[in-house]
Every structure is written in C-alpha cells, then in structure tokens.
Amino acid sequence: MENSTTGSSSGGISFIGLLTIVFIVLKLTGVIKWSWLWVIAPAWIPLVIYLIIALIVFLLANSRRK
Image (cartoon, rainbow, N blue to C red; front, side, top):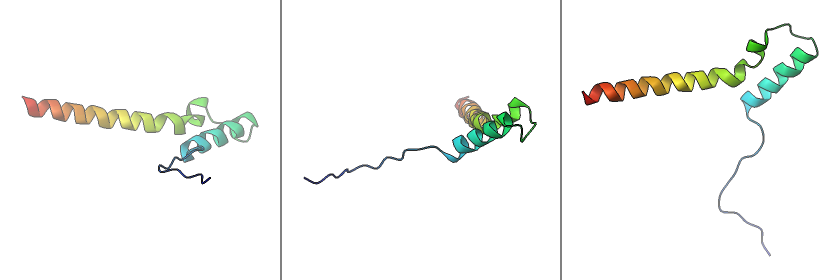
C-alpha cells in the first residue's frame, strides 16, 4: 500500500516560538539579566502588531460606511 497525502501540514515550532524558548533558557541560566517582559517579547509583540492592524482596518471600514 502506498502512503500518500494530498495536503501538506507543517509541524514543529516557529521562529518566534524558538526565539522565545531561547530567551527563557538564557534568562533561567543567568546569561541575560533582562526583565521577563522582554524575555517573552517575541511572543507578545507580534500579537500587539496584529491587534493594531486589525483596529486600523476596523476603523477605516467603519469610517467609509458613514
């Protein structure tokens, strides 16, 4: 029997996830002395950027309706 799939799936960890893990390990081992806010920044900064873009799009869409 042949094992084939028609779709593709990507597993694993993203660059941002890997960077967050690296920063956490460096913080826990004492290599960096950053605040935890900046250690986990790779995880929350993209989310903030997406939310700002969504807010701008939402506001522009509502202003065109009026």
